[in-house]
Image 1: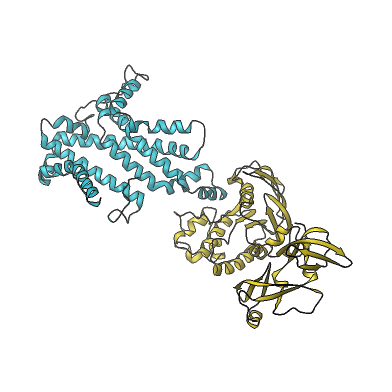
Image 2: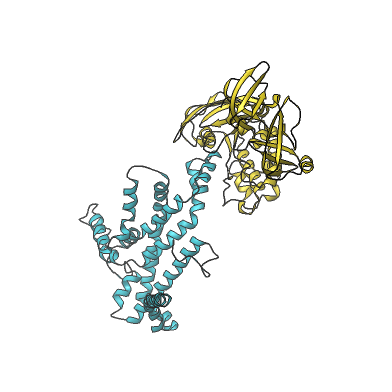
Length: 332
Length: 259
């Protein structure tokens, strides 16, 4: 079974990138803000930037090998297709092209030039080219970032299926948690050169190790002071509202609540097991068939029908409610 | 302001165009072709084309790898080397000539019998025109997208394949523009050639040298050769512009700088 074992360090301008990670025949997404060292990690694995430590593939040490001797398939952020070669020429640069053109559905584009392709087509050509040398490890740098929203949704699904089918140790770098969750079996959050948490996307959502991870996974993060009492912890938020959580904590904490756990109402419900925060609506943004409504410090994601029923407008006074069990307390 | 600048531009353009126009107005196209059949002109043309071709082959053959190294490697003394390569650009031709004699002359550093042979013409042309090619070539290689080079390497291409399959084809139009500039400069070479190679008809007398030798003896032949050089230069500059800005622009609104 193919396996990539990493323990690498690269000195960057303001911090050191230091990553230890084992990737089996699976896709691991490395997510993080720009400048966290995500691309550098891929480049270090490919030998494009000098790194200390070890890169091991199936027990063989790659550290001393030049890039061209490392069996990687690398999909670059803007795809880096050779502009002077046709689609076939690009793929053939790595190895025999015909099967791959067929398999990725770009056989009809074989004689086209990269400049004549759409974003989604370029992405497929880049992937075909990366696979042409039959790599042992696949590295993808922001494979969806260059695509428009519509193409992105379709390509995400296709790419997921292709990666599954290949069964190669794969690292996908992205700044988007949704892409990471959709593409990868495991997600690692990289902050200032260090992996702060690695796990399945749902693990990161349900048990984020820090406020940063929670915010990255899409959560609302509210700062406050926690007091443990019996079965519930009460948290006095910075804005003086008090909420409760079933998590155990004491002192300064971040309370995390996800937008899909929040419901909205016009009047204060009489349900004491819930947290309620009344505030003004500051933004209403439709996202596909849902609507993201920001009420004070909390963003809720509700169905389009609910939004319709409540007739929400900016400036309205609404009550955002969520359960104590949906309130996670994490370190700041 | 508009009037003043317009007037200045009119004077400048007239001044620049006048000598060129004069060459073509003085002799009719038919006499021009006729005068070119003069043995002096024919021999000079052959010498010029042969030496230029050899010199440019030398410039491209050695200049391309040199430019690639200078563009892709970072090392101590790189700036000094780049300056050295560009030096012949600003060197007075007489200095180039005396330098070549000091290096390759019978009593020179390498003490060869090259001076006053056709090879001397080739070397003189190569010496003064190489910087035009190398400078443009360095700029073309430096302008390559480093991600494309990285992509080639991840696809298993070693240094040689990266150069031959990616760097060279992508820099090709820049190299072509550099070659055209270098060719144009080499055709007009005069000072270094006459000092290092002399002006022997059929051996070292190039078109430029022949114009100088003929203008007192037979002005029309000199003019005809001059017209020929103007035509060559014009075509070469057009080639430079085409290669630099693509095939669509030169007759429309091409940027006015060359390479």
